[in-house]
Image 1: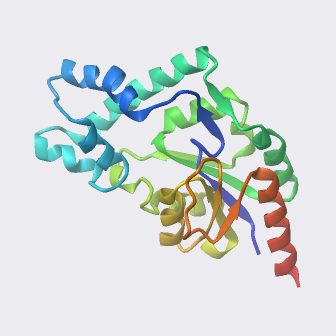
Image 2 (image 1 turned 90 degrees about the vertical axis):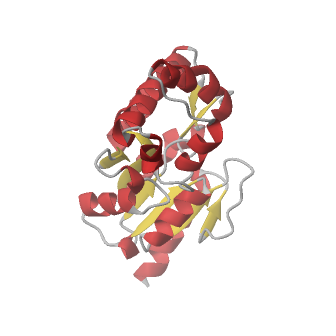
Length: 224
């Protein structure tokens, strides 16, 4: 029986207008790194973000990886605050109406993000979404390589919600979400927010209204 949904946050619940990762790196993060004598190219940074290289890879460059990611997250939070002031962080309209409906169905909800806890909480509270979630987890500085596609954050959610993998679905937009779900033993629902179809997902929905329909169907099937 489905008892819980575990959501990705960025590009699943909210999105950022005119956001370009490489432009953000060049304009915001690179200068902050250079101020501290850290020289890192965008490709290496991107590989760490995508899980191709471990988050601790910067240790090979003589950089404390925990302090490095704390700096990244500080810059990221300030950037998000600036975007919010400009009205460039948006919530997908279907989120506002469907999260309350999912709660009325008796489901537990969690949100997990590779962003920091503070960045994640910031965007959720920006649209008054935090109240819908029983648990929220951003990256864990005690285990930085535990970000998706590692299942660590999803497993933390299972524990916090006190449910087993077969009682949950993971809902996200990317291949990282699908891989993390499967590594945690959970079926994955890909929301097709953008043109990034992930074949390995167990289910595909175009929006959260379709997600509600899917969950209702699965719950009804499991009752019989």
